[in-house]
Image 1 (tube, rainbow, N blue to C red):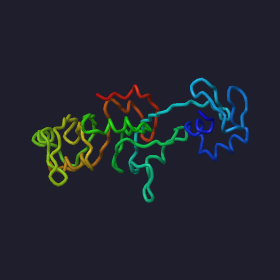
Image 2 (image 1 turned 180 degrees about the vertical axis):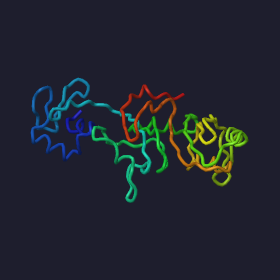
Image 3 (image 1 turned 30 degrees about the vertical axis):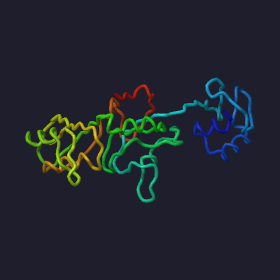
Image 4 (image 1 turned 180 degrees about the horizontal axis):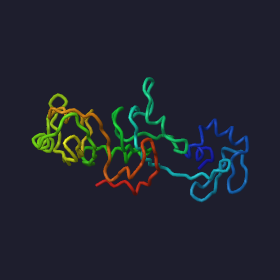
Length: 229
């Protein structure tokens, strides 16, 4: 692989920026300073440093964020703040995007990756990947409402949701398990049983969990951590 392509893949900068970095003698390959962007490197064997930071090449990268409220799930937007803006500097953002979406006022687990195939599999209706939401309600939830949610309710101009699972935490809090991702689905499902969501947090996506991750915090994970049935 050409050195400039390698450095771009590692998130150091664009090709034009890489040329300037090389000219400033900030790149070392196996201990030697190089200024040639055309130099070929072995991305898995050669030791490549940018200033004092050792580069680590990965074709695909995976990150989990505990998303805070107030940000939309998008790579860019002219009017709203996006989740991309709160990714820390150490995250390699090249070709990175969130998997699925969480509403602006919804908190919780959000996966980011540049692995398009995995993203498609996680979101495919055929895979039935479960998502668990912590739902705080305006009104006390009845057993009748729980039964309706677990059987499926009509939302969004006549769409019948798949059967859900409900764990009652208290009269005003439930954990709702669904395997779909319709627009505002959790809010619409509770609306269908004459209730209203006042706080919403995704606590699990497939086998991925927050595991104590603080609001706004991000960690990198391996693909092996992501299990798709």
